[in-house]
Image (tube, rainbow, N blue to C red; front, side, top):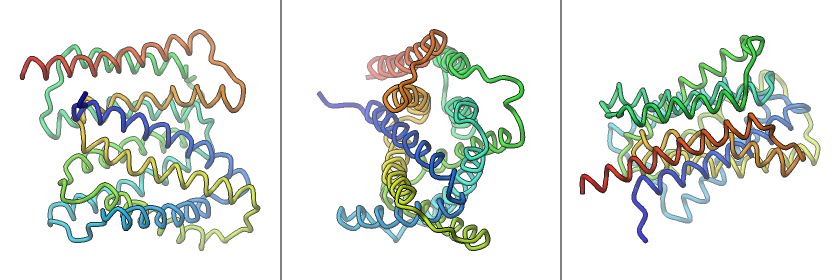
Length: 292
């Protein structure tokens, strides 16, 4: 059976969300004892080296780009830096659940932005499914009014920059490999991390912290590559809602690592998210069959 571009995009997006959740968990753990910018710098250095080796061995490093792609990659780099710094700063100071609640507005934001910027048509059925999925996210997290402060505003700003990043990714031509796009973004974040760590001052890193940083770097590399690929393989309107699966990965990891099981309302919300994601995918596949 040959998968369609949208099916492959959805699968890649699910892998990306799993990788980013694991990375976020490791970063939150290590920043309890190591300064944030130092973590960004060390994790970034490992990520850049790993991406460089992967791209070199696979012959996927394409430094010469069409002019339009140069501007798109540059825009993506700026958006990646801003989104990463805002998100990580919020992650250090906020409970992960509260920040996750804010970040789950991202699929809807990406979908609506694609409709406005690219003229993507979104039927009422898919829009209804997306809104129901968003309601499911709110049921899972149940954020209270006291959860929104300056760090929450940073989380919201991070969402805006991720929207810019993903829209730019979807317009980069196939002539530029996903590894090349990822390594430029990782390099930009790393440089900012090194500058910040130099200003803050470097601290000794114990073996445990070094292991967590390396662990997060591995999953960050996987997340970088798959996040770029997912936006370039499938239709952004179809693929974007599957960012909601990050919550499902968080539930699984919470049970596997910490022995915590979700309550009934959380399971109801998760079911809504999964159901709307599956419906969106099924609806798109049906429209493609009718068009064919």
